[in-house]
Length: 330
Image (cartoon, rainbow, N blue to C red; front, side, top):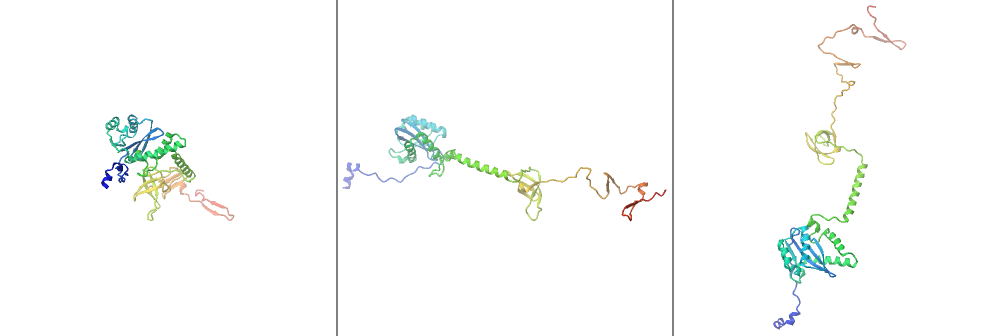
């Protein structure tokens, strides 16, 4: 009975499909723009050509109008390759433009391997299939709200390319270009940065202090916090390590100091003002005239020098009386 049922053509026509095979994913390429997946999306008589990079998940969408010829496809691919370079592999279904001689010649000349999936099995090109579903939702939503479809697609693409992908945990723009794309949201971030910078500037303006700096090679005094050394030590500025930090060298080693812990070394020099002189034990200064007595030089006396000093007595009346000795000749 089983053999007869298996040989029955009418029975075979009603058989269910066999269980799905366990998915076999493509090997994830280690470099961006290495393997591309392409497919078409049709909506309301218009075709859209989609390209997806398997590494970065970057999506390109091109409006094809009502035509899907191999010439139109190769023109779009040339446009895309001029920006990102040539891939090593391209995966597509077996649609007419992808099986044409013109398309195969285009890939061969550019050294691109072509992988054709089985017809009517879109899951074999699952990456492109998922991209088609996502973009189709965007198109339907824009059409239902009366929006411009091309503008809606472009708005979606910039947001998508800057959003973290669930598979790679990276933004497609960062994975492909190495940077995020600038968006309108960045304008809000910029205003935050400006506000912070303004607050910092205001803080500096209201802070007490003065701008100071020292130059490499300059002799300075720097603050020492060890118990065994003086409070201020002498050293030399080796280099400037930051906006307000310096490396100072001394006999004890190298130190990293803030400008608030450093002061220029001011050496006091002897003044050249003639009204301020040093007086030692051998010098007498009277009325800006100075005599220095030499230890071994003779000293000649004059009559004026041999006079006895005046004797001053206090009188009974409280006045001072100068009793100068009389001259012996008188």
